[in-house]
Image 1 (cartoon, one colour):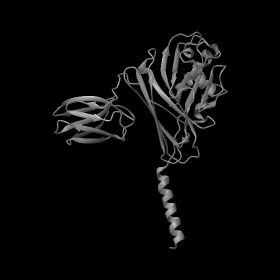
Image 2 (cartoon, rainbow, N blue to C red; image 1 turned 30 degrees about the vertical axis):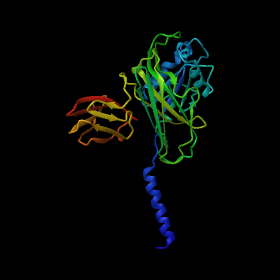
Image 3 (cartoon, rainbow, N blue to C red; image 1 turned 60 degrees about the vertical axis):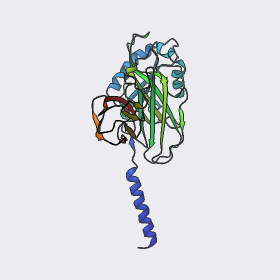
Image 4 (spheres, rainbow, N blue to C red; image 1 turned 90 degrees about the horizontal axis):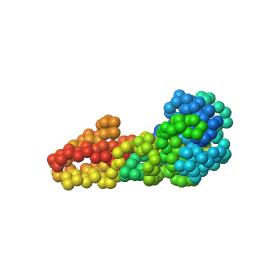
Length: 332
C-alpha cells in the first residue's frame, strides 16, 4: 500500500472516530409570552395559549409583563426595567399580548398547534443544563452549563437567564385569576451575556449567579430558565431547572468531629476524610429517595465519583464507628 493510501485511510478512520463522539442533541422549545394584567385583549387570548401549551408539556414557557400599554400592571411594577428590557429585545414594546417561539415573533393565532409542532424535534450542536438551589435562607444560586457537542459555525452566542414563579393566584384588573410562569428577575440584568468561547467540539462554558429571594416570592414555586440565541435572536438551545428546594442548603464543607465531606458544591469528585478510622458506609440519594451510590470506605481520605450524577440537590448518609449523619450537598 502506498503512503498516500495509508494517509487517506488514517484520515478517514480519525474522522469516523471523531464523528462517533460528536452528535447533535434535541433542541428544547421556549415560548416567551408578553402580557399585562390590565389588558382585556390579553384576558381573551391568554386562555387559548394556556390550553395549547397544556398539550405540549415539553415546551418551556415564561410570561413577561411590560409596562406598556398599561403601566399600572401589578406584575410589571414588580420589576419594570427587566420586564421592559426583554420586551424591547424583540422590539415588541407597546402592545400586548405578544408571543415568541424560539425567538421568532408569532403573528397568528396562539391556539394553532403548528406554532409548536413546526419546531419540535429540531436538533442543535449545544447541550445545556440549568440548576437552581438555595444558597442560605434568603438567596438562591443558578448554575448554567453549556457544551458544544457537534460542529457548528456559531461562535458568538447570547445567553439570557431568568428566575420565574410557576403560578400566581389573584384576580387582576382584566379578570384573569391564574398567572403562569411569571418572570421575576433576570440573572444577568437587562442585557444578555455574550459567549465567544465555544469554538471547538467539547468546549464548555459554566456560569453561576446568586441572587436574593424577594419576600413576596414563594420559594417552592421558583425555577430558572436559560436561553442561548444567535445574533439573529433565533434560539439555539434552552433549558430549565427544577423547582427551588424548600429547605435552605448549607453550601459549605461538611465537618463533624469524626467525618469531613468536601467540596460542597461538587462537580466530579466528593472527598471524605474518615477522621474516626474504620469502615464507613456512604450512600447518596436524591430528594425522592432514589439511591444512586452506595459504598464502603476505609481509607483516611477517600474520593467518591459523582460525575455521572445529574446536577441538583442530593443527600449523603454516612454511617461509621464515629456516628451517623445525613447531609445535603449540591452536584454542579
